[in-house]
Amino acid sequence: MSFIRDDGTWKVKTGHARMLKGGVIMDVINAEQATIAEEAGAVAVMALERVPADIRIQGGVARMSDPDMIKGIQEAVTIPVMAKCRIGHFVEAQVLQSLEIDFIDESEVLTPADEANHVNKWDYKVPFVCGATVLEEALRRIAEGAAMIRTKGEAGTGNVVEAVRHARSVLGQIRILQATPFEELMSIAKVMGAPYELVKCVHETGKLPVVNFAAGGIATPSDAALMMQLGLDGVFVGSGIFKSGNPALRAKAIVEAVSQFDKPDVIARVSSGLGEAMVGINISSIPENERMADRGW
Amino acid sequence: MKPITGVLALQGGVSEHINMLNAVGSATVEVRLPEHLAGINALVIPGGESTALIKLLIRWNLISPIKKLTGTGIPIWGTCAGSILLASEISERDHKVDQPSLELAPVRAERNSFGRQVASFQENLIIKGLDDPFPGVFIRAPLLHPLSDSVKVLCSVAEGAVFVRYGNVWLSSFHPELTDDNRVHRMFIEEAVIGS
Image (cartoon, rainbow over all chains, first blue to last red; front, top):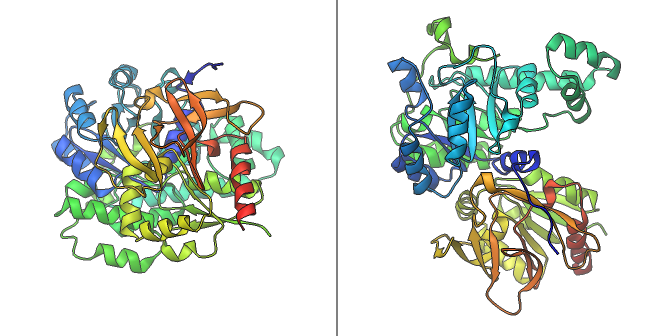
């Protein structure tokens, strides 16, 4: 006797994201870096042509990566390989799905292709992760089919302040919603511009229906552990590893710090002798029109 | 007395197992360091990324304490990546992979044997010991090839075995903790109660 097999379901998309919890996802630009990330204990790698710090310096339009480069990384490692498409660029998303990428990041780090609409993520078998700065933004992305949420932070700065702001904002709004009387939920949904069913779900469960990771500006083991202690499920590290003095050592230290995030003595030990961290940028020195977190809505 | 189940909490689907285990009447403790293994009646190794998990098991000196504990006969269950960590051999498609493991069951775990995430799927399963079909959730799942007659196959799909037992060691390549059906967790905890 055999049963019907269903692929690309909400359960297997959100389930895959759940299996990444407590893990570190690292930005890599070639197979060599991907191997270093896997060796260090990354749960997944994000394949992209330029890390956010370089996109910031070099400027120009940032797009989906070259399929050849993505394939090279897929062949080099056995852990899941993620890749980014531009906000609203549903053809880049189609291409990434045809490459059998394991997760698509519809990312503000790339130059947006559509200033009004995001990709309809229900159309894909591959799960999507999207950035959010506030709860209503997270709920809109989930309503569009995102199986995982991350803070936007301010990518490529090595400055964790924006990621902390976004994490506190989303988690704080969840706590408020949980304490809100049921009859007020509809008017709150209206003001928030978020789907009522998801507002109700957050009120009832006290959490998002998908996992919520930290991203944007994480550069040290303590940064990563800070995001975990704030209550996020895992960590993306972008430029912070391969723009540092000793990527292999730093990558391993961040993985270890996340696995024991509530033990300061362990974090102290793994933070020793890592060499130079990436040079950071103060957010106030970035002109407003160059801030990536403001892309998407 | 209420059994206590340790859930390896270094990375992966930890809270899902804890919720399930609590629902079927077990207390739980998160295992991050060897001292957390003291006093538990059963151990669950959750899904996650097996390459990351094995590195962390080695790093935090958990390999030999877990082996020793399993030798005492308490039930131990690995789901998905957890089952890979319990297998004596690991392969990817047909070649052997050089990845250390706990080596607690004579099983060859074939990693990602259904393909990448686009091939992850749900399928109802017939499981020995359960009357009705069970909702199987397979995510970049392995196949579990028994290497000895003492490995009991509890469930197979068209491609091969996905749920096996070797004495007190349970391996499932699917994720009962991601469903609303707690029958497999119940089966597992009944064993822990008998043992304690």
